[in-house]
Length: 396
Image 1 (cartoon, one colour):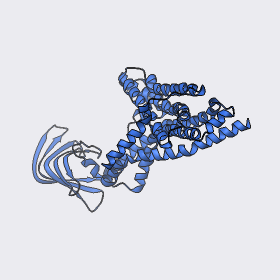
Image 2 (cartoon, one colour):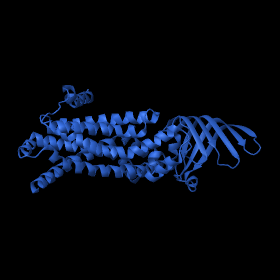
Image 3 (spheres, one colour):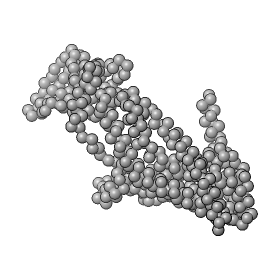
Image 4 (tube, rainbow, N blue to C red):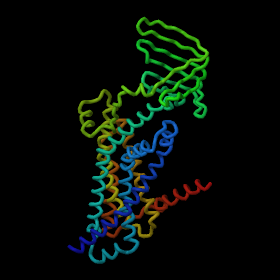
């Protein structure tokens, strides 16, 4: 028993370094995809370093939802492959230790990562996504530049809706401007002009949109009268500080921004359309099915590592990512089919786990009986081929 305990402890400890490195590496790669959005915040919204760090921290849970299961599979695969390559598995078998007796540390490790991922999906993601939405709105409302996005009707500024066909961010020149101003009680002013300019006053929170050669339509809400005014130039002043004093910060929550209790209560209340009901149930099942992918992929990685003695660690890393991409593809198909109502949400979200876990159990039984299943050559070489083509495109 002491020997088994030492071997189990040894195997469990060996899983930690590749898991930590993979999680850090994959999360960093996912964060790289957010750089364009972050740069947009810095350039257009004047976001500071504190705001940027907050935005990154709010985004991390969404990434970790996928990087933790992926890293679990990679850690198990690399560890077992290393032990197989150094003949440690053969030595343990020769000492009378079967593969089934080596499985407990892998299962315990997978269950631990499952619980971490479940905490992320149940608590981290809803709070992170909601905080990200609120912070983004706050940053957008704190800068007039957010309301000057080309070809978009933007109403983030309280009482004003702005549409601009083209914006020169260097000179702040505007083309084809449409502004609806509702800040005056019982009066709606619609200003249109072929060109304009954004002028910043000495007070950094006060801006002026100067329009040229345009027209104003003033509509009196009470008597429904309309006044048309043509102008050579016309200034619309916007005081961001005054507009934000009484601006509510509460936003409507999407399904994936609701807490578990809120989501369950919303499903119990019911929806007007079956599509919304399916979407809410998909989100609910996703909170638990993705964490259980840690267990399914961990079980699958164990026999794959045992029978992959001839593969290098780099190929093992690619194999882990390849199988997780297959899992994610099945999950995407399940989400699409479940949202369309072709099959129940519970099947859509849990079928990928059943497929991966079932394949892992099948391969484990075959390896335990010394009858490993070798995948076709093209599947074995697929990760290396993809990496080679990717490098070739980068070089060219």
